[in-house]
Amino acid sequence: MSKRPLRTLGISCHYHDAAACLVEDGVIVAAAQEERFTRKKHDEAMPVRAMRYCLAEASGPEIDAVAFYEKPILKLHRILETALGTAPRGLVPFVHAVPSMLGGKLFVESEIHGALESLKVPGEPPVLFPEHHLAHAASAYFPSPFEEAAILTLDGVGEWSTSTWGTGKGREITLEAELEFPHSIGLLYSAVTYFCGFKVNSGEYKLMGLAPYGEPRFVKQIRDHLVDVHDDGSIRLALDHFGYLDGLVMTSPRFDTIFGGPPRKPEDRITRREMDLARSIQDVLTDIVLRIGKHVRRETGQKHLTMAGGVSLNCVANGELLRSGIFDQLWIQPAAGDAGGAIGAALAAYHLGPEEMGLAKPRTVTRRSDGSITDGMRGAYLGPLFPDADIKLFLEREKLVFEDLSADEATWASRLAELLASENVVGLFQGRMEVGPRALGHRSIVGDPRSARMQSVMNLKIKQRESFRPFAPAVLAEHASEWFELDASSPYMLLVAPVREEHRKTGDESDAPTSTDLLERVNRVRSSIPAVTHVDFSARVQTVHRDTSPRFHALISAFHALTGCPVLVNTSFNVRGEPIVGSPEDAFRCFMSTEMDYLALGPFLLERKKQPGWEDASKWRRSFEAD
Image (cartoon, one colour):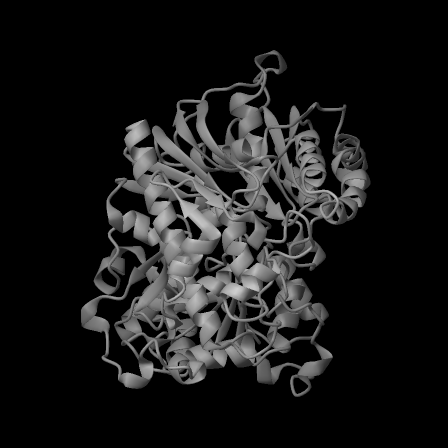
């Protein structure tokens, strides 16, 4: 009788981006964020729905261990010590933190057992508590394609650590050094995010997207007044300029004095100050990451680097780190933020967990059928799959008008390619849902990158978001180097690379960084693929690989055959403030509430103007809090 697989369940919750992950015999079977089920963006609650999904993907009902992505007692210790050290002002954030700690975080073990009981998991599996940055490190190293590698974790704060570095070899992870709270690279970047009028833990990517419109004229002020950067990349913050220690906001009045006034209010006009601040803090962050990279390479001797933590989603800094040549290769966890903590916790339990529990199992690097090494994230396509029969049942039940393309995959790809080449915008819902913040062709909105109007149409009429935000190119992996200055794969859209010189178009003086007309600069044509070319000729590249996403690869291949362009615009299937769509119902509602032209639900194609009630978009629209 064969032995059943060893199963570990990872959980992250009670801060933001709650998620669950199931690992069987060291293989990631399923992972998903709670927000995709509850439709509440960055949902922080115990991820019961995500857990239910993961357990449904298991080969059996038994769970050998559950792992939570941090140690709540250590976090409480940090909160208490911070409050006492900054009293009496520090008591204000402490009073706000106490209900959250007492409401769940301190008693998360019993809450987990209650959730497992409600999900009918047999027995009472032990709950393990790896530290927050160990969970990040495990999510970076264990799924990576490297036999051994350096590890770098960068975020706001875990229990005490805000950054760590170390090495992974075999099944072992050794964290050699850490930066401790309150000094934090992530909190420095988040403070400027807040000051520029964007939401912390949500708007940092907006700041990154705004940066190329500005000049680095505030770099000196940041270095002189806010942060001391050491040669090894460690930092010391001038804490009297920040508000997160003893208040409920990220910055203090001293911050206002340095940068000429109070923080921008959300939805106010973006001014030259915000553009230049975004560029300046991006340059400072990139410099810090490069310094850390050099130090870690020197100290570890490793030629490969793996990364996780929310700061690792900064694809501009990642791209500069790759181009620096400090490391031969980078691998970045696609769910690098707290959602990925669930993945790391499950893997840490399996590979590092106590041997007396039957854990501490060896690590095997994932290989393709041809023997080549790949990563263990399976393209990040680890979420729910909706069978074609279920989708068709939904369409027929709702009496929707659709075209059935299920008979032939090639017909599906060529039909969609023709629509895209005619400047139609298409919602794409197919295969397993992605885990992490990026849509990678399975829950995406796609368009023609050659269209000069596509960025503004998608931003304002479909995504309903700020006009300056760039879109990503999804490019056939085998053609990526012909269009972008990129010699590495980037399957998770976590590297920024320049558009190659031969595809660029020269601008004029109104496109210079000194121009204050943001809208005018957004709409400039800068390359033969203007919809995915940022103001500085950069692009956040996704390389699409046949082995991990065959249908998306086939679609781009059909578009390439038709147009000579192996690139599509790819953005997440949602509107501003909404989580990425998780079900066919979510996809249809989002489709009907925007000005998308077509929706591909699996093999079924819907034209918006043929659907009942299409003239009144308001009847489909749901209210989501702006992020």
